[in-house]
Length: 521
Image 1 (cartoon, rainbow, N blue to C red):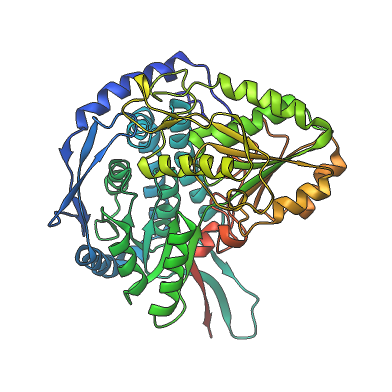
Image 2: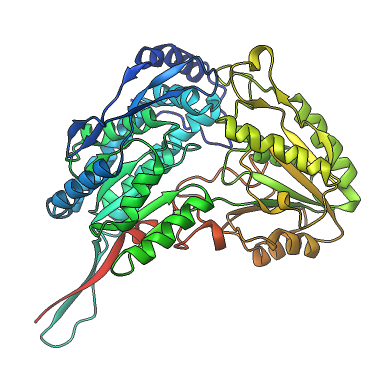
């Protein structure tokens, strides 16, 4: 049987089969909408006292489903189940955990069109972004398996002394609370869950309340592959009560979180003071990502890369290009070319094949966009293109906006520093690469950064000096976006990350285990 062709964030395959399968899945997945869904604790279907309804950001008349509003009681029960299952799950041969994880990858690959269509409905991704995310999730699971197998479960013989034999082995911590975001509801959840389960930990998983059905599909894939119900538990509902339990429960051994800086810092601080001793905390908390365009840049590459990096998935990526520093000699040409290309972008229903920019996730995001435009204009900024909320016709039932480019703001303005998570790009003019590097690094964040330059010396200085964890040069597919498991480990510096080990990289699994030396005399 031939292997499926892979669709990544930087390569869209022009395949009729891909489009046909996706469009069929759009029809099929609607058959599941409007249903009531349980939580799962210890393998049992569990209902909460209250529930909540989710609707599609594409069209607010589309009801995705009704889900359980899990609270502290349910979260505590799930921790108990996960703790009870830890010994048996952690003592399963690591080769069996590999087999199960690979079976999950196979199942996700088999259902790629359905999962992509579901994400389009739940979080508003266009087809290429949604299909690529499913492919990335499959690759993430397989890459984590490959690393674990290559390292033989992280068990290594050590140097021997007379009469003694010693082994170093990496052992699981116990129960992990895992919290995933709306913008990559499948792959980021899959990455954290697989790292924890593969290394022998047990999990209490709380998916984003914006995409709980995608979370349930991922949960089902693990259970169908053979993970015991107590080893993986799933709680739906608001983040605050779950976070409170995760931070304070003495049987939670670690937390893995992807989301906003504010939420991540609240978790980290509470986890550090409410536990009896330090415990591992794995987090990715967004960024304010710069791209530098020097006078030697290929402007065709730069315009394409910045456009895709800034406005892909409506700017709702932690890796989105949000600041551009362009050398004065090419600034006018670059800005004009980018304006023209941006105005050609189609904003609309992401189910349609020609749409690049879909809806914002909710009204709060729309308000943030409108406030950014208003504040920027009030403080001297000039809108080069965009700046408008779209309300009529095809945009009537969701939160749609025009991709926006603004220039002229003073350095130090809040819009240069705050992550917005909307399609809003600031451009500033610089006189040298050194000035661009200085401005790029003048942030508390440090996730992704890019440069466009045909001068190898400039590229080398960029890589040596930029204070970001994931860095690109001359990337048409996305100036600061599009990392792939096993190719670009994805982890941030400073306020963007905690462990210094990127997901999809060779060291990521080590965040979920601790070393034990075993000596036999």
